[in-house]
Length: 131
Length: 184
Image (cartoon, rainbow over all chains, first blue to last red; front, side, top):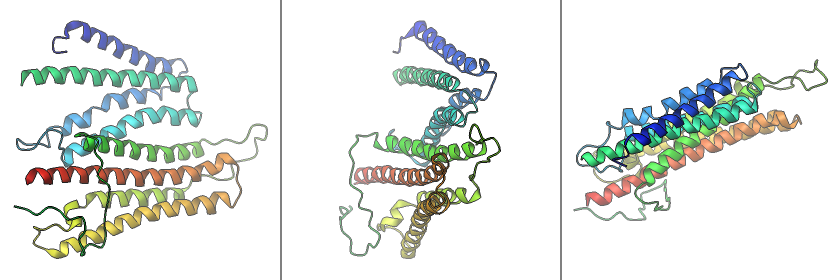
């Protein structure tokens, strides 16, 4: 994937756009803009790992060993991802948004987060080629 | 040099004999992610009940009839207890609880075990409190199913919080054992 090139980037940006389109449609079709929080949640999801990744691990420890700050980052990441899926379900359960809006925002959020994950994976492999 | 860790130590009162899982080298990562997911799931289960209660409307057809019961502050207390207990349990240094050699202060082990006991007591108290709340506030009044759901949500919140704490503890202590093997 190191030479994935421009096709991967275009594909990923297309999927990202579709994900945001789904979320915005789920808001705009019912003129209830609460599902937009899902987009915010999934955009924030990789942030803790990025912040805490450089806290743990000196030269003498292995990569997968983990330390307190790295674990905290992973914990917060898992919390945010589950929040992104649970928020539309909770809103739909208490009849604040429609079930269709709930499904669309979940699908859109999954697309957005999948894009972020895939982009991180390709970027990380390029970086390890450099090492 | 160091001695291999014995499986049985007569000084130990509070054994934590968790079986050794072998999920490969990513077990710590998987455990931490799983614990975070369970934590979020627990809190969203209860928040679902709270939001549902805040938006509860009268049954269709009889609009004068208000909902008979709401989620009040009493429902939040068991969850807060479990949360505090989880915080206390996970703030303890796990090597101290095991009572390994190398610490100057032997009373530190005793204190660590005391705090571990307090943490687990808080979590168990939260669980027992949620069950008591379910029985006393919802089941004995024989509410409808959509209202007893609040109680069940509180119970499942506390169960999931306890599971999350256990998974987190297990994954982190497994990681410590691996580190110990490396240091030999």
